[in-house]
Image (tube, rainbow, N blue to C red; front, side, top):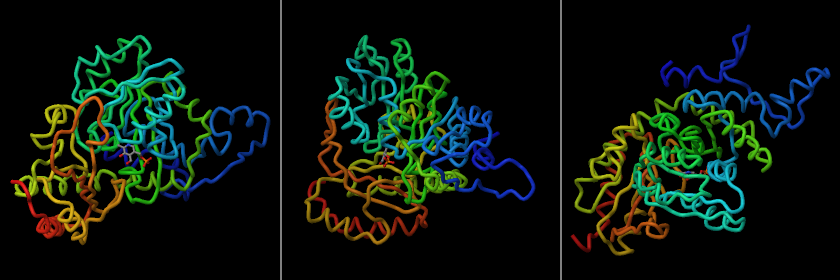
Length: 386
Ligand SMILES: Cc1ncc(COP(=O)(O)O)c(C=O)c1O
């Protein structure tokens, strides 16, 4: 089956007379077993609400169908998917290699939380290839990648990272949120775990938080499952339902996000107020050649470096938008544009651009209206340095 069919067919109720199209929301803490044999059998599948109900299993099946791999488990947020995918594989005295372009809270989890438990982190240049081997230590257990980086959009060489990780007996974990499991299949490129903040494109409507962890094989899946279990993770059945509902239209939405983001990016690249556009599908983006090789498309999130400009002009620019709004997160139907600060979150590399960086999420509005909105906002930017 092709992905577009899987997105419709996976995780649907079994055919029986008068069944609904969608799995119902099955909310539960206690699950009941009428007989002793049911009780024994149930413990292996659906035993207690925290371990999920049929609603959760349906979403997990759909995500596995999309990502490939052995099994998917859910987390209550994308961030917890990231943190659990590290915790599952480390113990005190271990070492983690983390991309320098990681989503900041993932970074902070390493710097602050893991450190307290004696797990050390080395940040690496997201553009690294085989040279990652020189950073691997005997106690390295996880290489974590985020491709493209969600602030600066470097596309990573997953095959080089996977080979190095596996040679050292470590796991490669990939934050695959940008490609939504649709435009990139990290497990095909050697990842042991592909995670997503399903909060973004899977759910797709800016109204629910959820994380997904898809493991490549059974032993990896067991470690992930037990980490979630021991941490007491729980995902509401309503959120699992909303996410699965969102996935039914994922490919249609992504096609539109892609088209509009590319239109906007190309239009911005020609504007005098813009220094550089950061879009994996455009030539100037670091890792563009890898994007061409490994990805089958691009989602709606990209960045741009503005020419240096004074703060009052920047404020007027943001305040002038009528369609784009400011808000964290992305992947919903609405367009967003925020000021981001990659220079604050780098240690292995440095961010040298002088001008402010903006991050844009191209929503599902009419692209011409979005361009007109940007045009109006840009007119408020007085370029102080050409
Ligand atoms: C790349 C990436 N990973 C993970 C997350 C965390 O997801 P959540 O907000 O669901 O915790 C985000 C959120 O912005 C993100 O951009």
